[in-house]
View (cartoon, rainbow, N blue to C red):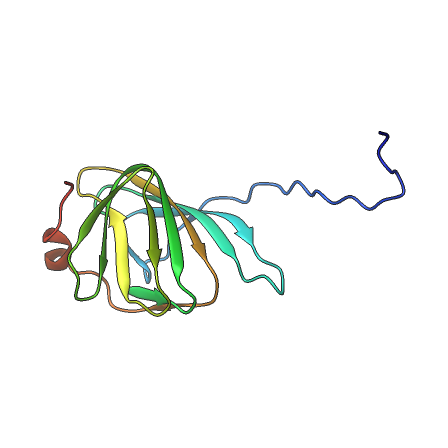
Length: 139
């Protein structure tokens, strides 16, 4: 079957956007963000690859419509406020419900990379202290 040359192109290959250093207001340590997808209305989907150096982590934060993480490499830690810290590894999928305060980042001695998939807005809080972070560790 011949392609219909009168039809509008449906597939758009977009250039890779540059990596950006994660802002100090949102992260402790060195974190790099590669934006993958930014939804155009009515979609609100945002997808980014986020690379954490050992010991780097987010501040406490929540997402108005929740967040899904897919760990692609390394070992990390995640914690919801008031809950136990958990170790996460490549292949793990983590869902955080809407408005649940949490943080995530790399284990002290490992890099960690995850895909972050969100809709809606993020609210950012205090940085995770070294004492809070130190209660965890790679398992």
